[in-house]
Length: 222
Image (cartoon, rainbow, N blue to C red):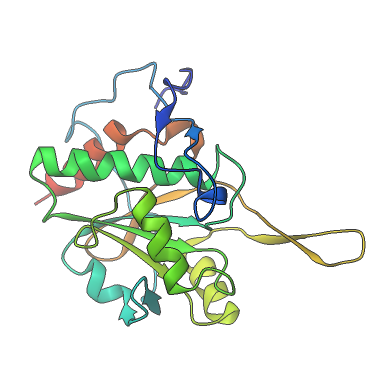
């Protein structure tokens, strides 16, 4: 695929920036990338399987234990890793804005029953269910379509990250104390019905229209 050369679209307004969402006033954050290319039509290309991901028992925004297999069963999943205190507007907020746009696109395309959106927290110690619920409200997430999950322990999170191939490291100050920031490469994963990763989107290719075409391409394989 061509390298994305487009600039950012005009800023999009949401209720608040996630880092300040629980106490601060409304703020403007950057919107999703606007592609400078036309994504190829669905079904005109292939998305070979990359690797299979495991199923895990996590907690959702209501505090209930959920099996990721049950959420993703029979559907194509778009999976992002975020944390609610992320201060990088081209990191977790960009991923969440893209999934927000994709949520609307799936509804408009009549594909909301064919796909699901999943956001998993990098920070299980601070991103408890109540925190995830507030974060989900910022992006108008429909719980029937977009689920926010957190691991019951850092050890379980490490297993999830290893399964997907997602990096994560806790930033520390000169005394070795956590600063609250988590370093990671922005990745969003497209997972098919059989649990295989079929595409991995970095910031430059995190375009709702492209992800939607990839979902349609996988659906056309039937």
